[in-house]
Figure 1 (cartoon, rainbow, N blue to C red):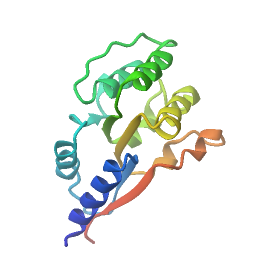
Figure 2: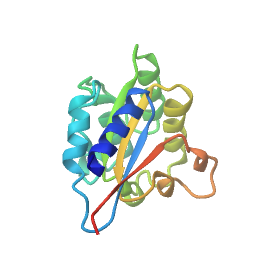
Figure 3: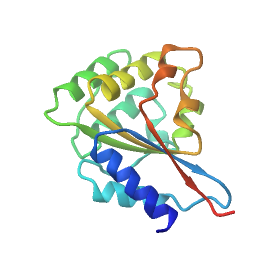
Length: 170
């Protein structure tokens, strides 16, 4: 079985079990990851179009949270900071089912001035993903998820994210 098919099957199994997944794209030439992410989102219930972290539409924290809430085509409003995290958390927790969100180019988290070191954002995400289990994230990046977390902070233990590598051919 080709490597990318093995990766696809593993990701689908994990997400169906409600585990969050970090797909790390490694190597040169760069593996063709975009069709893989799109297929997974198309084939699994609950996902809509992946949120591209390179886009300006998610440059601010409330915009990113709105995009996550709207994944799965459930349009919701959200106030600006500082009330955005409280409302985001309440909306996810009050949903009758689990929410799913796919994010591509997650390494951009490190470059977003509005939330790259936002301990409150990471705390909220950790809570809804690991404790309440109301959000399943499927993240594609060139970095391991742990490398995007604030350093020397309790959230560095946000280690329930399953790590899968998609390697390019050498």
